[in-house]
Image (tube, rainbow, N blue to C red; front, side, top):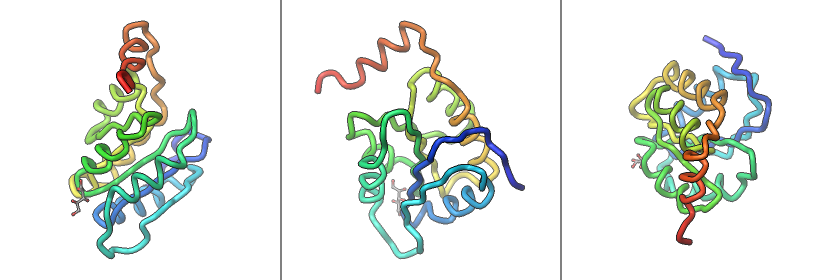
Length: 149
Ligand code: RB5
């Protein structure tokens, strides 16, 4: 299985030990993507907030990124502390579609212990190819995400 997802911007990705295997598999099966793998690179136990922090600090405007831990929850909680990040925990492609079209999510959080690489590829494909539906109501709600600061 090898996928050619149509997306040509650099993609940051990071995981903790519980997400590392899925991270490696995902990269292996979508080699046409411009991955910037920030780690981790072995199964030594490590703290998910450190990886989320590393990635979020590198995330620039208009970029998208992927974070993977055991459940995806810890990564999403930490990533959403940064005001330029809209991180969405997605376990299927319908959720990913809504995370992009309604929430304009820019960071995809995946639950490494609960999905396989095939599922991860379909979620990622939808996440990377679905535009934000910039209806006024969706725009207004996304604007409100950072209020109050
Ligand atoms: C690590 O055991 C696990 O807690 C972590 O990967 C993640 O699921 C936390 O949200």
